[in-house]
Image 1 (tube, rainbow, N blue to C red):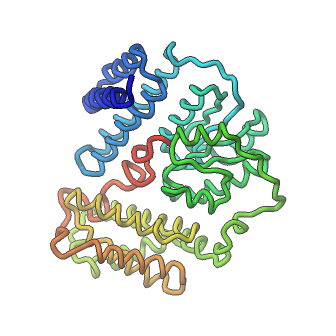
Image 2 (tube, helix red, strand yellow; image 1 turned 45 degrees about the horizontal axis):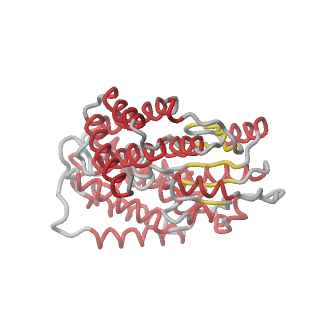
Image 3 (tube, rainbow, N blue to C red; image 1 turned 60 degrees about the vertical axis):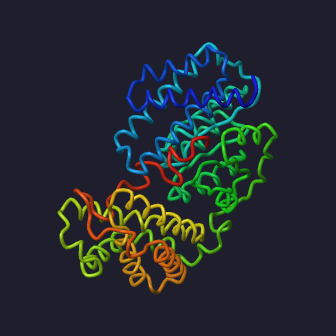
Length: 388
């Protein structure tokens, strides 16, 4: 079969799987996958060239406001169940002949699909895989390594706000003598944050990760007493710690001034105010993540994404700059925070034009209360980084 014929075949399978997923018909979705396996299509291709692209499409449709959060979650649940069933299909049984790999999501990371796809690819290639699933606390991960051993830990994270937890896990695994391969959108499109946090390797997708593990990742030299600040000296200014600890106070300060700076907020219902407060807290959380790795693009990119999500829902992204202005006032004595907020404000000013946004919220949604990065496609969600 030529590459062109194979691509056409998987494209047709994507369309059929998409139709089944959108209809929430799990049996039809499973039939698409199992028929493909029965017809001789490689299981790895089914995982990465059929299921993963459909999940990416689910995320894109959610971001464009053509799928609800509930529909996105239902589609993801179907994908996870199909992958689990696929793993037991007779056509994909492989006897382990290589070493042992532990695959896990960092603590508080619930976007499990990228890690699950990697675990299945490694299994298909003959590795003995311990798949620990979503949100694995670092002490439990290290305890597993001490009990069972591993040649490498493949650590997955989709949300940049989990980078501090990822850093702790990387350091702890290395202290146990096990190298860490980092993957997932949280680590940046080029793996910049993986390198910054001291990971031994990084891969952009499941196939690249499998190749990197097969090539061998050296066991790290034990650094007795190594701390996170050794990798990130800028943490010595304590800005990250102080901003994260001040999140409740910062949210209250923004909410207290929101009506003055964004008059439409005066008409908010109580539910809208609650949603706005949650989303302001999320903005502060991303500011903290950007402070942790000292990278302005992490924060600016999140706000650009948020503006697009709001506008797709006919919600005014013009509500975002006032939030940054209040945070800038509250954090005026913090140089790095001031720099990050100023750069994000400039980026939003360039993005938003007088004709490019609405003057009021639609339906019962506040300007800051569209589903946030934990609930759908974004740079780093379960659906925007399907391979890892």
